[in-house]
Image 1 (spheres, helix red, strand yellow):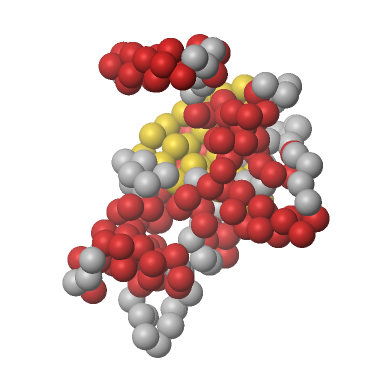
Image 2 (image 1 turned 45 degrees about the horizontal axis):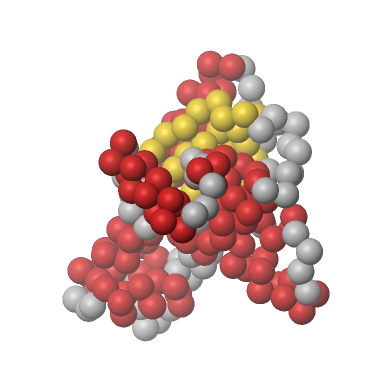
Length: 202
């Protein structure tokens, strides 16, 4: 961790950016995806190699957990199963996701194998929090590149009792009307970047 901080500090110094530009990802996520919820929220950030689980209440991080599974694992599973290059497997994952097709009927199950691990950890984290504080998680927000998997929300609704939503960070900034749906669709991939930008505006 210290080595990583030293590297980032060196980059900031070389680019002459102020040190307060550094921020833990979870805080940027919270700033961009939370909308003044009055109840605890679980943010599931599905990255390439890891998934971050953050329970937030009134803007404060109550629980943080790291799961060593991400969207890259899903792509590798497809690549190994169908004996193809990683790049091609990534394209298939993005195109079909959890939607079964006659040409690739096994892709959804390969993805679900890894999502099941993430969802199990998420539910365990939620249950532990709810028992400890006697409060229910009111919403689960998905963010990160892995959240862009087609059919994810529908599949997640079978695994969680709370409201399910995609992160929509661009809803907090002004943008041209013609870009509205594009930004909404790609929002989960930019939650951290938007959250960091919003830091300077808050």
